[in-house]
Image (tube, rainbow over all chains, first blue to last red; front, side):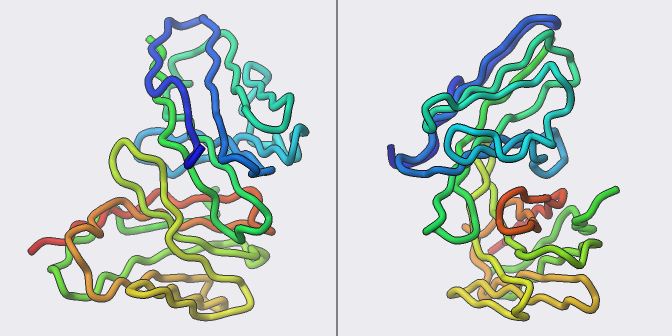
Length: 114
Length: 111
């Protein structure tokens, strides 16, 4: 596609439930990133994929968070046993080595845990 | 411990004047510095970057200056336009992989 697509754009879930957030990167981009942005803060790094493998998952806050990219394209961020503190905008970005610095971000998924 | 800091949460500038957004960092090993612009309900949009080996990079109305000794960078927008009104994030990283973002500065350009 022309840009990075994230679905759903909004998600409201109850505390304790499981959620999946999807990211469709720009076609051909090998690198994919997940960030989380809380109110009044800048984006905070979660995980980075190069192809199918997680090259750096040091930003995942705990073992309730998990992300996959099985075919090196679409990625899913999975959150188990959601907590109210997980409420944030989850941003996905992609890039290619030819592009140089600067990723292309999607519009994000606003997750609200009630 | 915030490695990238934007100490001004907001800035208001008249159309046609210069906007100067500032950013400080603590880690002298960063390889790249970037500026992103964000409109409400959209993802951040990449604006301009600078390598740690340079001290200036220019792209049209946007210029980024890097002062490594002071661990400080700034974004200059000349002339400022109403469409520039947005939140601007400074970011720094190693090999352009993981980026560390500041908290943002909201720029308002008024007529």
